[in-house]
Amino acid sequence: MILFNPDKVQWFRTAVRGGQWAPIQGNPSHPGQYVYAAKVPPDTVTLPRFFPDTRRYTVISGTFYVGFGDRFEDAQLIALPPGSYYVAPAGKPYFTATRKESVVLQVSGTGPSKQTVVDPAGR
Image (cartoon, rainbow, N blue to C red; front, side):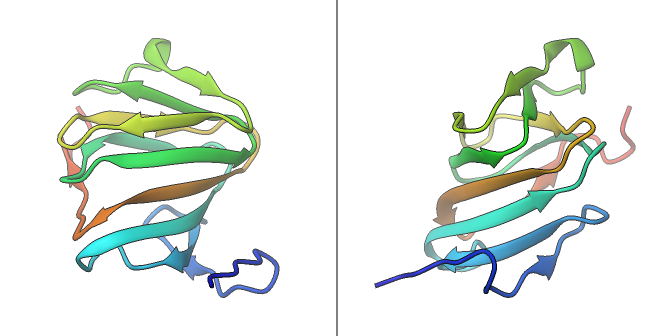
């Protein structure tokens, strides 16, 4: 049995300033299935990146914005309100953003997983 209560779990810092994550099941850096919760602060933008595994995202609260491709393009962002679900296929670059509100996500995949940024210089 696995129980996850966001009010009682230990949250850890992420590489995103102000971001947090909390493991629910497994660990993305180890082999096997993983599930975690993520808190993304307002006004956050991520550069195009990809992962070796297919990742599944459920928006729990806030509106999350996602676009697919090698370059960040604000016009390509798709708004995903609470309850939305999207899949980022393995090896396919995507980028994300939040606006004036924070977002809580549930993320799952199969590890080991590691982020690769398409252009770390952000061009």
